[in-house]
Length: 451
Ligand code: ASP
Image (cartoon, rainbow, N blue to C red; front, side):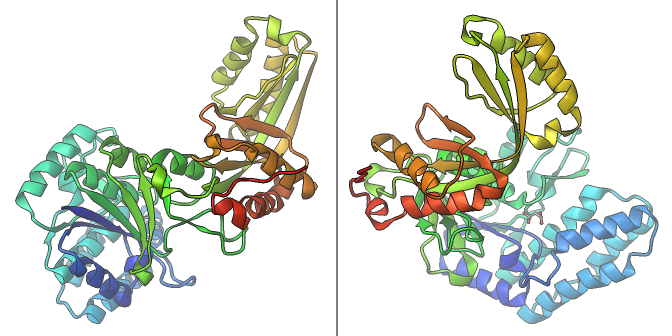
């Protein structure tokens, strides 16, 4: 059995956290390939080392002295090394970074990747595992795109040479050795790629919470924990605003159907949440797996009498969307109207132009625009087998006196999306959560809806 473990920044923020990580790894010899993030925050006031490295880079390109920032970074690693009691040539490693910067050869990705690189080297020394530099196994092409085939070949070769290894997260390199990073939080993705590449049986993602929650705890008081969730459900939830793993991190494990478990480094024996290709029926689970909310949408409403008789109507609308590089999230329609739900971020500077073009192309009777819409996504693989789920959601919102602006239900019946005014988003999430996670429902008993 082979387990790939990714430890996030808070799991490796200081020497105490390193000790917890070592205990976890040593507890199970199947934990063979370890992917560390850079030291993150042990407490709120801490700085993430990656943030310090970004600062370091920005100072370096403006030719400002970055000594103080380097000292802060050094202090973080010094505490770790002294606290876990290993010998490690920290000065030599930091000198290398310092010299690169002083040379004026400041490569952003190189500087940013040093947090994971140093953490990886220290963790490998502490665990007695081999250190495998991510630049040798996570491959990018010259344009900075991740190269899946080359990476998986390198990882297969790596696994045949190294029984155990620590491979830093977040970065890789092209053939020439130029470093490239993934976007922020990218160590999740490295872990998933390594799990695929070495053919792991399990990908453990260790963080500072005991799994996934059914709603955002800053909105809902102590939300229920999700025990098992399908890849698809998780993708819907994270796309809709739930902070779980890096957006792209699911793809490599999905391709090989490798289960993922989210576990808590600070409470290692607590059950985590399992993310599976498909959750077996026996696993049960609540009708609603989770609720997520994303703000910042605009809704363009186009009304035209007998719109549905005009075969070209939708094509004309979509051509305006395409020509203006807008991402269309949803497009609910009726016989005489269609609504376009678009991220406000993209529409912002083009609103007038887009509305004018829509008017010209469609010859609409009326076009109006709603700003500041929040989309609430209610996700649940079990929903399709249950009568009354929409009724439950809409009744909860009606009771909370929320006016629903948009409704979308995918044909998969795995999610119901509701658009409300941003100002009412939190209240709406709480209302749906309270209704959905009342005892009867979460126990999977029949829903009695009497009104
Ligand atoms: N250290 C990087 C970041 O802070 C990558 C990661 O932690 O996954 O984004």
